[in-house]
Length: 92
Image (cartoon, rainbow, N blue to C red; front, side, top):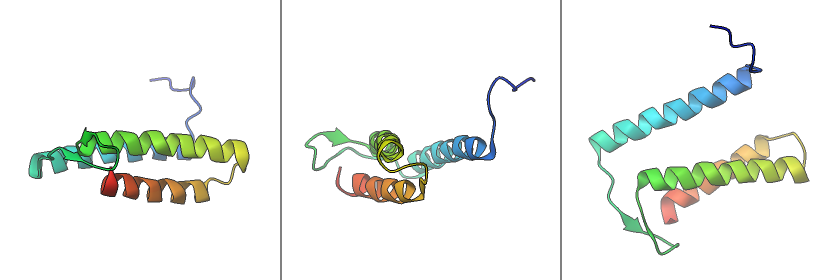
């Protein structure tokens, strides 16, 4: 299989592996402990998967804003994204 059309670097591979691992963990959690809807600060009913989607979408925007405003050192953006994800899972 020729994958030379994409620039597969270690950070790219790790990114996709982490996303796949998150999906596997969420699947196992859903099987073991089915999620129930809850209404959070947004006033809408969300489940665990909805909160994951909002977290990933927010993390993408945080990283893009960081790239545009600060620069290419993304470790602080990663930390901010993790705090944001924790807040989403806690209060949304």
